[in-house]
Amino acid sequence: EIVLTQSPGTLSLSPGERATLSCRASQTVSSNRLAWYQQKPGQAPRLLIYDTSNRASGIPDSFSGTGSGTDFTLIIGRLEPEDSAVYYCQQYGSSPITFGQGTRLEI
Amino acid sequence: EVQLVESGGGLIQPGGSLRLSCAVSELSVSSNNMWWLRQAPGKGLEWVSDIYSAGDAYYADFVEGRFIISRDNSQNTLYLQMNSLRVEDTAVYYCARGTRTGHSGWFYFDYWGQGALVTVSS
Image 1 (spheres, one colour):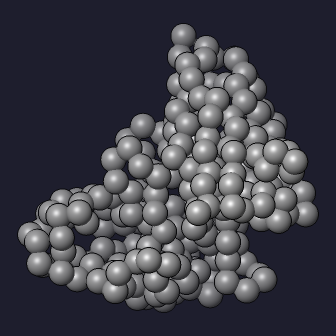
Image 2 (spheres, chains in turn purple, yellow):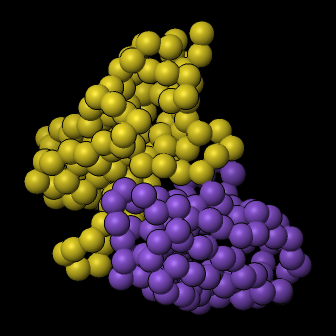
Image 3 (tube, chains in turn orange, yellow):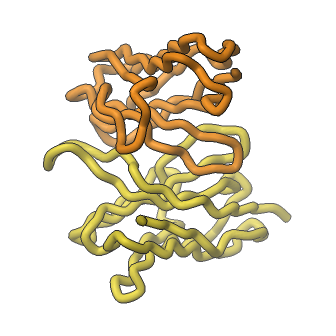
């Protein structure tokens, strides 16, 4: 199975700054089938990005995704306090689908 | 508005059984690929089981024949019957709708329930 390694483990930034979160796969993610989720305490994950760079419905354009092959990035521009959460990447290019261990973003 | 509402979680002793339910509205469980995923305390997410619209069911290796996924189309509800529960099955269990771009490849998840906590402890 594909192992996804997210870095950093924790990221502490200030409002208005830009966050760059990394997700590295142990093997090439087929067709760049990679998604990003945001999870706040006590809540279910919320889909942000799918197919590496497509924003899900209702997601502001401050969230963007890039990458290919084994290296993927979630960028959050103009951070707001409500962006504090744990962010997970997920690959669905091959079975079984797998998730990264998460990056905690503190604003 | 699409809603997925899990129920049936609780405290259970090792070796016991529990059935989780996921009541779905504004989305047909029979026409969609429905999944169970879980998150152990303080840990990341992992796939447990899924059932395709055609009825094919799949399970993670760690299930080892202990869990059964099913659905009731008339009730528009997804189920996960969990038997021979182990301490390591302790987690929040989420139901989710799997979706994908096009007709090939695997799935990401656009609708999630709020989760049901299952605690396996003596």
